[in-house]
Image (cartoon, rainbow, N blue to C red; front, top):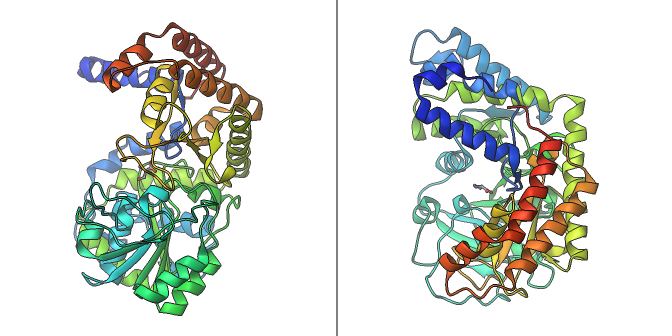
Length: 451
Ligand code: DSN
């Protein structure tokens, strides 16, 4: 990284950037929604495309000077069409700024305020934008798979819509399609949503389509997490099955932060209007440029190999963690992410995530099915393999990572801390954790990132 102009123009900001580069280079980033984009993607994002306003859509803009932006947006659309094998009666929107905004655009385009939506219960792996609300201090009966929400409408989607959620099976922690169907028949949603942030298994999109058809609902498949795996054919695709598919572009797809909506043309006419002028003004053209480059990269044969290796690594990691005595939610994974159920350990997700960060392994605390703790101090740890696979790590490295996680778990299980602050201090100063960090850094230095 040279960035000499930035260095002399703004040394303070430059130093923060330098530190972040060092952090990304020297730690194993294992948050499943993160990835490391290519230099080409970053060059496109950090380009003069960011200087242009272009409200509207190609050839129908409200500002002059968009001849190049039109080409750029059409190129991104053409690449998404090819990569996701779009049927001829489907269309693409590349303008939404994020996954939540993409989902909101779908709701604004297809629903009326007060309509019933039905997504997956957040603690089981759903997403905030699928209608999350909760009742403080209320205890959930985990055998009742229908969740009616609570008075804390923390997300706009539960404030504006009547949100009913379905849970996973309490024993297997997998989708219970019969239960989803029963709830749908009872509450008659106008929209059914699948997808989320922490469900490690593939979803039966055809079965969900049948359920949606039985109750006359639209079906939205949010594949933000697995978009890259779907594009590479490593996970099944909901395109052509669901009515609408949304996804972010920076997770397994490894482009830049942004989102894409795919939908049947007759629905996309409404969704396009919901994106602009319904929710947004000018699209971020530098983002669309980064997305276009990322889509091009994902069309190359190496990307298929990469996506396969993501899953091989996640499955190897899951198997190694089980050998180390960890309980993996649903017993494994079909994709890039896994959840460690820590309910039988003496520490929870918040403690393990913090101690692992000191050891050089970056993960996040997460809720899990049958969660009994609050989201700020949940029972699970979520981790994933997209970024470390980009670095070039393989199955043999998963054994080392599982061993490091296990060592850190054993170290912190001996702590007697009065509160999290005390725990944090002990972990930060712990010589044994520092030893793990040295080993992790050595591995990282053998697989450098192209910054
Ligand atoms: N923040 C994303 C994730 O980590 O899964 C979802 O919005």
